[in-house]
Length: 165
Image 1 (tube, rainbow, N blue to C red):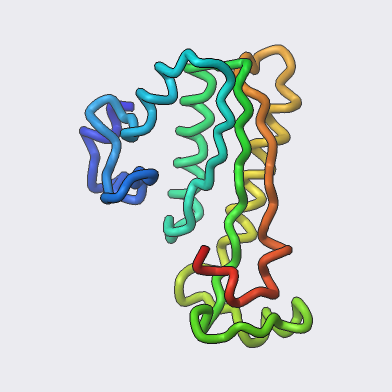
Image 2: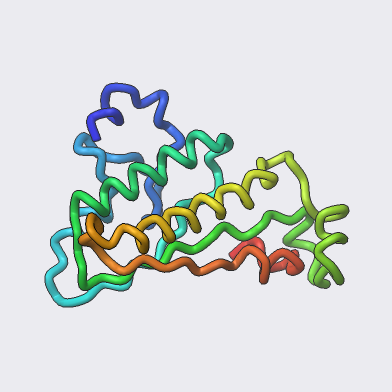
């Protein structure tokens, strides 16, 4: 947690979402929504999360996911349900083209690019899936919430107009 205040330049990729303004973790390493989540005592929480797409390096994404898993282990909430949503693919001309691609091969040949690191999204999603499986297999050490994966990548790949969601 202290890594954020000591080496902020290294961790600038870790941006907090969920509010109207860009923000970074506080001096304790928490995003603004974390205290609300941890202090909520009104019952079970459905925590639907997308860790975001703009990490630009697999290492940064992996580190962010490691920090998130560590957070969940440090603050177990066994009655909660966490759903990790995969990243949807990026598409060229997503705001001007509204006809779906007829096949995944056409998506790869016409709509996909490495310009925005879209080529890393499948690997990012694989890491999310691995986290879900790791938590499920850890029957002795995992004391936290149920964790599931909502995979939207393949169902949104052919829809150019589905990207700006």
